[in-house]
Image (tube, rainbow, N blue to C red; front, side, top):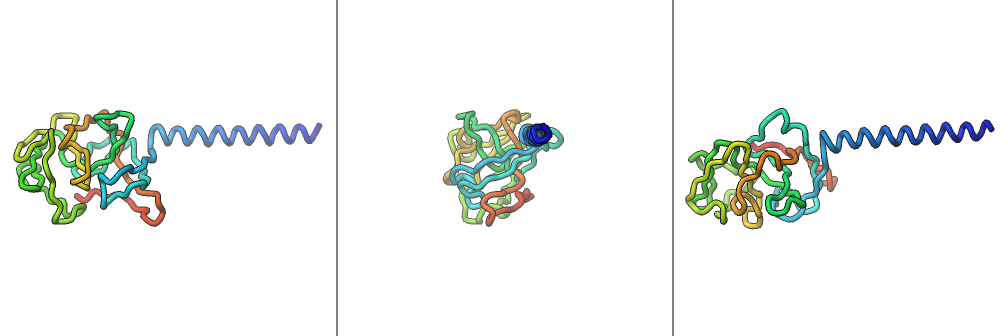
Length: 185
C-alpha cells in the first residue's frame, strides 16, 4: 500500500509539473514571444531560408514601429502565410522610387547598413517609378532586403497594423548564425 501511495504522489507531481510548464509556455507563446521560420530568399543576404527568428509580440502594444524594424505579419494576399520584411515607411511618410533608389519624405533613403551599395530597387504594380505615395494611418510600407526577389509593398500595398504579428528580435537557428536583430537606424 505504501508503494502505491508513493507512485500516486509521483504521478501527481509529474502531471502538475507538466501542466505548469505547459501553462508557462502557452502564456509566453500567445502573449510575449513566438518563433517564426524564414521561408524563401526575400530577405537575403541579411536573413537566410530556413533560419528561425524569435519575434516579440508585446512591444507593438507599447511602442510604434520605426524605420528599419524587421517585422513578421500576415501575408496580404494569403493570410495563412506569414511574411518577414523591413519597415520602410511609417504612417504619414511619403515613399517613392526613382532611378533604382528609394526616397523617404523626399530624401534618398540610406540603406547602406543592410544593403550593398549596388542594389537597385525597382517599382511594382502598387508603387510605379517616380510616383509618390503617402502611408496612411495604422499602415506601413515594407520591403524585403532582396529587392529583386521580394513580394512586398511595391506589389501589393500597405501592411495594416492589425496584421502585424510582431517585431523580430533574435535569430536562434541555425546556431552558427545566431544573432540579435538590430535596427540599422
